[in-house]
Image: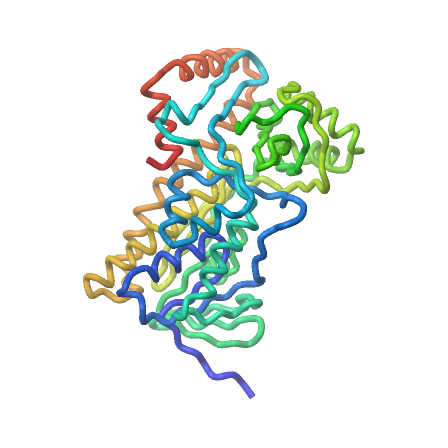
Length: 398
């Protein structure tokens, strides 16, 4: 016997960091209190308590404010994390370097490093507690078809849902985006990001460190233990696999050398992993009755660690637009209002993506004139005062 079709005002696919924040932000408005919302998610999120998770995110001050605004700030801060006050960036081929200090921006810190699983668990657990939510978890999207008004959806477990508004927050390989027929521009960097947790001989001093090598950037991201860092080592794909499979002693020696022993000897703790670096940008953020947010709309090079922050800004922007539309008497799925969300975010995200691609190319280049120019540029920028503060303010979300 086939299951009956269930009707919802909104269906969200993906209850990760971005999807969860979107719904929590939307439900803050009294205008949304009667909405019937379905959330399809593949698994429950649990905050890590043992070994550090391999994937971490640097939350900007703006992202911290967003998470606080939906009532999750205190719970998130109870999770292990590191507020970093400084960021040091330098070029392997020369003497160019930049030192960012929170005090220069009049802030207590530049950002906070959290394990991805911690952020996701805090936000998604708050989401499941909302009375307007019907959870389909664990479950996944199997089919999505456009109707005259809205979408018909079937989950892998056989549930059939209909909604005038479908929100895709299901990641870089979004099944929702694929079923909707939205194409992506794609840039394959032919690189992999090798991630691991390491113990350092010297304390990290609440500093995020990044060295630009010709093979790609190497980042040491501080964790709550002053002698522990999470690393992201960008390498050509073949080299990444060699380092991934090398003996721990050889890996430790190569990593310390690549980092110029800035924190002394290093020791890898636990597992290593590597993931391909591919940037994607959806050709459309919205279709009638559909909107993409977060990695479903765009995924960028991890060079600046800003992917999650862009996604959280998407979530807040879409929630704000929907609430503004309801206040004007518009339907939740109003086409013009959805297109306004796309205009709000698409240009900003595209500029950021191209900037990261340009920086990756600039620092990978071994052309002598470019190498000299970028080193001189870094020296100039580090002493630039107001310009440096302006860039810091943009990174902080001011």
